[in-house]
Image (cartoon, rainbow over all chains, first blue to last red):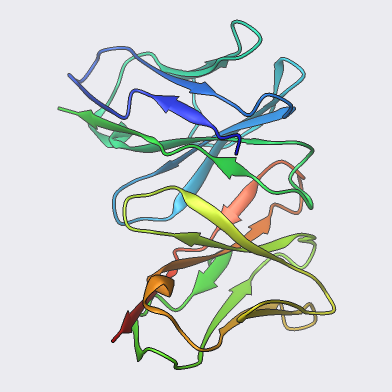
Length: 115
Length: 111
C-alpha cells in the first residue's frame, strides 16, 4: 500500500538553528500538507501546497516557515530559526484531490525537539 | 467557542460494549466531516467520512446533524484494538484545503 514517508523520525536541535523536515508524498497525489501536534494538544494545520505553490497557510506558518517541492518527489518544511515552542510532532500529508471530500494520508511524523 | 469541540474522556469500557462519541463544530458553513483515529504517538488515520444521511462501516456508525452542528460516532461490540483517541475533523469552511481537528476523545477498552 502506498504511503507517505517522512525523515527524520526525530530531530533534536538548538534554539536558533535551521531545521529541514522531509516528506515523500504518495506518488499520484496532487495536494500536500504540513500539520503539527504539540505534545498533548490537538493536530493543527500549517500549510497546504498545490501546483507548486502555497494554497493556504495558517497563522502559525509565519516567516520562519517555508515549504518547497524541490523535485518531483520530495516536499520539505524548513524552519529558519527554531524556537522552543516549535517543539512538536510534524506530520506531512497528501491527498489525491482537495480535502473535501477526500482523504488525507498522513506520514508517521517527524518529532522535533528544540533545546 | 472552539471550532471543533469534543469530550476528552477517557471513556473506559469493557470489551463488547457500545460507546458513543459526540462532537460539535462552530462554523455552519463547514461542508466535510470526518472521524480520524490516532493511536498514542502515531499519525492520524481516517476512520470514516461522515455523510448527511449517516453512514455505517461494520461496527462503526457516524451521524451528522447540520442544524445542530453535531457529529456522532457509535462503536458497537468494542474490541481491545479499538483503544485509541478518536478525532472529530471538519474542513475549514472558507477553504477546502484545511482540516480542523478536535482535541480528541480517548477510548480505553478493557478485557
